[in-house]
Length: 251
Length: 201
Image (cartoon, rainbow over all chains, first blue to last red; front, side, top):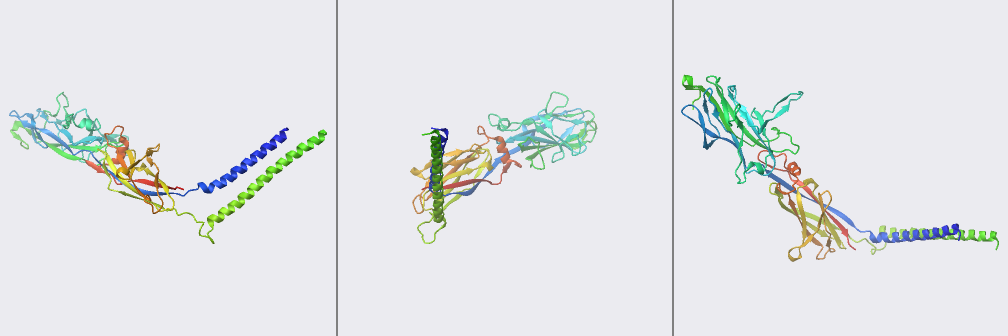
């Protein structure tokens, strides 16, 4: 058989197969076509979340001794108190923050420290190393400046993101987040009062605590967007000079 | 037979085969043309006969739910009920596609059940690769007027809690942000359920 004859046979076979497929396709088309449609309906869900039941900032009461010094009463917690200062006599002061009913939503903890007008340079305080001063770059400037809180004070952020693990002890007791450190020594929780304390000076020092949900992108708190949690403590500092036998504000 | 005659016969055999193929193709083409005309008449006609008509195909789906409010710190479940109705002359099958892409990765599990009591039947729920859609197994609905023409499917959505292992914290924060004060609540976040009906012969 010549090649030409073989090719012709293949051509016929291919032609017949093509025709069969064509006919079967046409027959099968109407058979397999089925109605199909889609209906869309919509539901909805709402989510709620809670950061905490309560956030507090408190301190132990400082009790004045006969020699004019103060000692903290470990049994008595207050949210406001006054002192009569003497030059060179430091005041124990231990503002601490507790968070009750904390959920597991990650959150930042902030403290804002507000010095009243004419706060004396002779009175010093320092936050513990757990707190970092928040800074921002002013618009049109390269210089970083402290973030100003809602009450006009400097704002510090706690070193860790808050979760259930670090706001409660294993027994479910709220952890106390201490705020103050001593300026020059190893003793914590102190207002340092220098010998240069002017007579008749009056000043206030207030602490505000905030808890804010963590952003997904780790931005710092934006007080314009976030509502602060709770203000609890105001601690006025009054000064007097024992030399003239009178205190400016009394205690 | 001379060589010349042999060559001539071979050539004519090839010609015959080619012609045969051509004739077969022409016959098929004519048949196709004629058949398609007939089908076209069947589908677009209606004049002079009411016997040749398309079967009625009419289906419906309706959704119902109680307020679904999930405390993200504890997680929880929400139920969405879909009622499927077949008003067609033929049986249909239905699959439900639950599209929860708007909720992020806050769903742990999806379950779908139909029927009640002893007749309760769990439908498989297959998640797609993006884990934002789930498709249930097929559910058969009888033709219009039959006892099985209407069926309900209860879809149970289980939402993640913050403390669940593997919880997507970024997704949770994206949902709860911006929380103000000590607590927060989101707007209602929609999700879609598509009921896909297919005619059964």
